Image 1 (cartoon, rainbow, N blue to C red):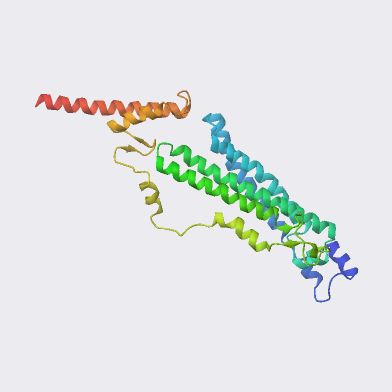
Image 2 (image 1 turned 135 degrees about the vertical axis):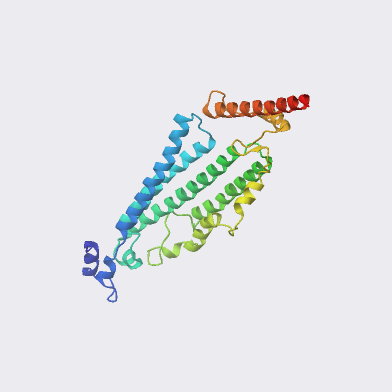
Length: 288
């Protein structure tokens, strides 16, 4: 569908002769917005479904759930800003931005883009830390894993600071604009290249080299033994039972919660089973 702004820009003589109206009218805004909305709805259903089940079914809302909720709350305005930027023309050809958009609109897109980058970086931080908090809760009796989680969490927080500073001080003097070379006042600012800032934001997301036995490494790091209960991450040997009793006193799980009841029942069943095996062994020895 032809854009009236394109026709107006051509009529005003702002568009060079080598650039056609068909080129300026090219747009993928509709599929881009549809994709953003689809992913947002799908993500919201998964995240909110998990949070609701944790809060009302299991009735345990931990630190990882709080961080997940915060990251989702930050994510929603970021999505709104992305859609707004697309509607303003930020997703069109560069020539469309330069020759068709007026200067106030260009400056508005730059300010919105600046704010969206800060929200995006902050959302990623909360999302990553919520994942670490989740594993921290699951692996609460494995000291080495807890130490590794704490180290990674510190690295993420320390890495967030230079990312934030790169965004805030992307231009000197500090401004919410990211001026193009055709904008008035471009020479007043000394700005970083977009690629440098994007690479700084993307480095913590880069995956490591894949390994075929990554799962075995993860399981091996838990030091599982034959008498180790995989589902409850608990040692069910005689020595492990005593250790569990000691650590269970520091556990913040309520015995009235679903988690606490399941763990308590599972523990007692295993304890009774071990006692039954011991008594059977004694009976067979006496009969001999």
